[in-house]
Amino acid sequence: MKQSAEVQGSRFDAARWAVVVVLVVLAVAGNAYFADQALLYRALGVVVLGVAAAAVALTTTKGRELAELARGSRKEIQRVVWPTRPETIQTTAIVLVAVVLVGILLWLIDTLLGWAMSGIIG
Image 1: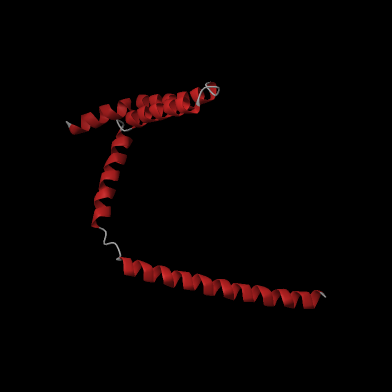
Image 2: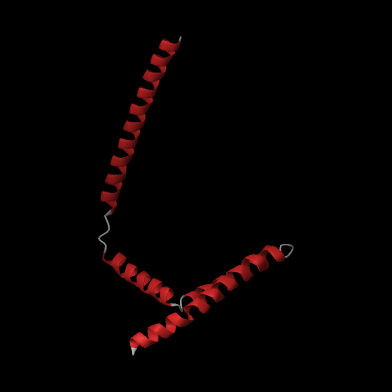
């Protein structure tokens, strides 16, 4: 039974994606057409059409898969062990010191090569 529901859902997916494209085109064209109107009204129109397009897109098979991926990602982020504040500060300090040392090293190499080239060229 589930397989026939997926087939039916995918049968109408092309039409739903066409509606999404039409809504996005309407948002872009409407924003350009009403360029002389206040920015607030144009922005509201684009947001409303964008939300409508997203709502229609989420009813497609790919849209439902994307929503499920987002839910799974949120659950996975909750399981991550985040570093403590002292660990974060220590790691940041190490990275900053390494960046400064490499920057100084590259500056010295550049300066030495510049002196060498000016000595060769004259």
